[in-house]
Length: 181
Length: 84
Image 1: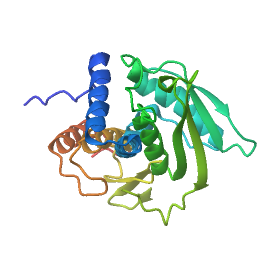
Image 2: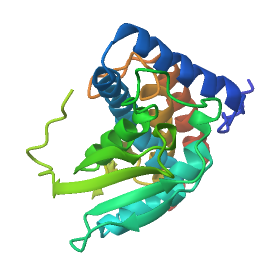
Image 3: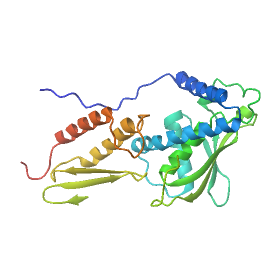
Image 4: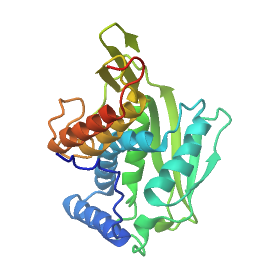
């Protein structure tokens, strides 16, 4: 009796526009549901956090990156491997302080905002791509690294660049670790 | 890895602290690649299922199907050492 052939990993290509439009629809709906920009930003971050805690395993399983030995190494991997793998872009990395725990990712291109010209009136504090901050935060937490991840600058808000700041807080104690919801 | 006369216990720990444990015949080859394959299957069919909650038992049909296929492939990889 013949056995079915083992399933090879399938990387279906889907249309990038569909993904970008889906993200836009998500943000637009959140804007309808919540009046305050802070609330929309919070929910985008929360959703991103949920994605990040799951996506990190896919990233580690497929990229075969080893254990990192510094925050700077971790930030480089996020920029050069993770962003490349999932969004097809490679942000540049800068270190913002001498204790080497604050870094910035400068996004030259951002596929998520391809069709967004500017933020709507009355939404000047909206962090349109805040999902990304949540994803990074969730992923780092799963490898026992607490971090604050926020948009420091945003082209959509009129800044000259789009900059995501990552501040590594003290390393989480692995044994006492409890995942926040 | 733990070894006895009747079985070998292989453990693979991810950077996130998840442990995959495989109990196999001591002569079974290819367990390392099997463990990595199981990691991929877990990240695909358990974690990407939006209705699966982390740290709960995995009751996902696709996960079980693909796991079964991976085990069949590993078994085909055969054994080493004194033949049966």
